[in-house]
Length: 437
Ligand code: GDP
Ligand code: MG
Image (cartoon, rainbow, N blue to C red; front, top):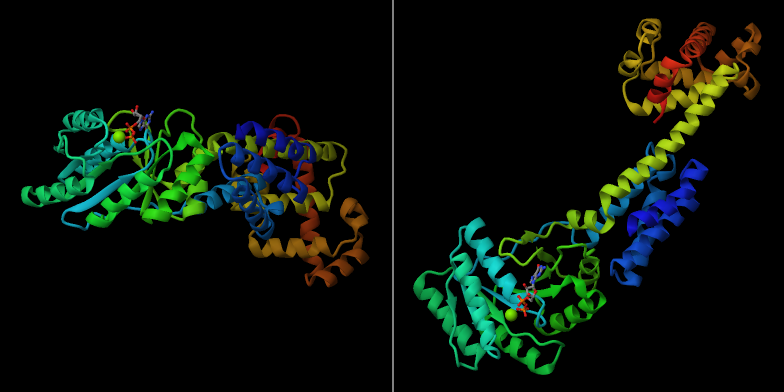
């Protein structure tokens, strides 16, 4: 699955300890593969990952605090967009509002008709009427009647009548007379697309002018779903898609392909055989599902933590060997600055609060510190003891600060070094933990 794939991709990332452009490409290749495996059309998956890559590089993922998480967020946001972004309601403005079901046999039209009627009745305070227009199999009418009984919704049928257009019209008239404000027309499907079925549904569509024509599709049918959707959309120009059978571990990649090909919103999903197994379609939740998000996030975080621990270990070694220099200092300050208020952070270090209390590290001071360090030569940065009074003057001049400020920083730096050395072991671990991004 996608998580395993990403796990593999992130091995690279772990090894390098950092996300590089190569890693981004590598990771996205896995995302693409996973999408294809989740039934997303190859071309769409490819376009998708190249868009994400562009955004990733544009947003400086490489230097982000948590590059892995940012990547996951980008992928998720983009997937959500691809599936429409927003929740799409169904049109209930008609009186009655007519909702026409279309789709292949077995896609779940009859079941969904019942679920939708139940949803509208219980959640939207509507008074729906179900209409049995699957005239070819007596069992189909019976099936809808059983559904109607379960949810306490009236079913309009005319056993023996072979004209679904006439039945639909009669049902709408019945609804008007009896105060039903939604009419849900369940129709016949065939196992594959054929002209007779298309003509029939088109005739009903033309006759009743539904507020909503919904295309019902079994999400387990994968790529075939796209072709079916296209064929129905060409004839009916439907208003929305219903993805059924999204229970179990169906990945739901069909959602992306269908949306991309017919450009119609997915409105509901079916997640089981029972009447309450219906959900409004939330693009972002589907993105989570397709990505197996929970796993991905923790996965990426784990990779990131390993990177941080590696850094912390290197740093500790340097401190132990007295090799901690201004470059490291600056790196740490950058890390800490990203984490929020310096004072809050220092307050969290056990026993260090007092020692550091008078070290003034607000934003302005930080800018001075940065400027001073940038004005040092590499040798001065790695061996601060080199910095004599002549060098101090030069550094102060170069950074637009005073010798006094340079002295102050050197003093703070020494204090910090001493403190970190002291804290090596128990407290040091904690400090390192806090210092890592
Ligand atoms: P129709 O031929 O399009 O009317 O399809 P049906 O409504 O008769 O459904 C076909 C089969 O799929 C039935 O056995 C349903 O119980 C089952 N089904 C429909 N929707 C779902 C769903 O969301 N999840 C599951 N697991 N089964 C479903
Ligand atoms: Mg049916």
